[in-house]
Image (cartoon, rainbow, N blue to C red; front, side):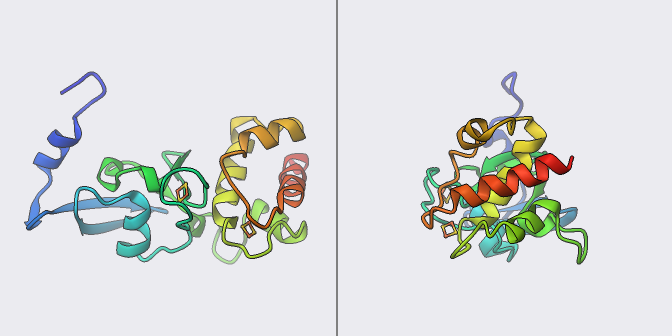
Amino acid sequence: MSARGPSLTERGAVLEERGPGLVHVTLSINGAEHSLEIEPRVSLLDALREHAHLTGAKKGCDQGTCGACTVWVDGRRVLSCLTLAMTCEGREITTIEGLAEGDELHAMQRAFIAEDAFQCGYCTPGQIMSAVALLEEGHAGDDAEIKEWMSGNICRCAAYPHIRAAVRAVRDQT
Ligand code: FES
Ligand code: FES
C-alpha cells in the first residue's frame, strides 16, 4: 500500500468477484446505497447512467473536456467520465438528482430557470453542479472569476452570460 492508500489493484483484490471480469461495488449516491456489479474499468459516469440508472449526469465528450458529466465526490466536483467507479467506494457521490430537497429545487436550479440559463439543456446538469461548487469554493467574486472557474463546463448553445447571471443571483442571495 502506498502513502495515498490502497492501489487500484489492492482494492480490486478485496472486492468480491461476481463473474468473469466483474466486481461488486457499493456506491453511496445521493444518500442511497447502490450495489453494482461492474467491470473494474467502468467509469463513474457509466456506473451512474448505465448501472444505477441515474441519467442526470450527461456524456458529452467522454474524455474530460466538456464538463457535462460533472458530479461531486465527497463534496468536490469531479469529471465522472475520468473517474473509475470502483475508486468511489466509501465516498459520498452527489449528482444533479440529489440537489433538490423533495419537490423544492435548489436555489441554483431555480436561478437557472429564472435567468434562462440554458437552451438545449444538455450541459445544464454539469453546469449546475459546477456552479454550486463554485460558490462553496469561494470562486464567484466577479464575472472574470466565475468565467475562469466554470471554464471546464462547455455550453455549445453559448448560454454563458445567462449562466453567469444565475451564479451571480445565487451569490447575491447569500
Ligand atoms: Fe466528461 Fe465530457 S463527458 S468531460
Ligand atoms: Fe445547450 Fe448548454 S444549453 S449545450
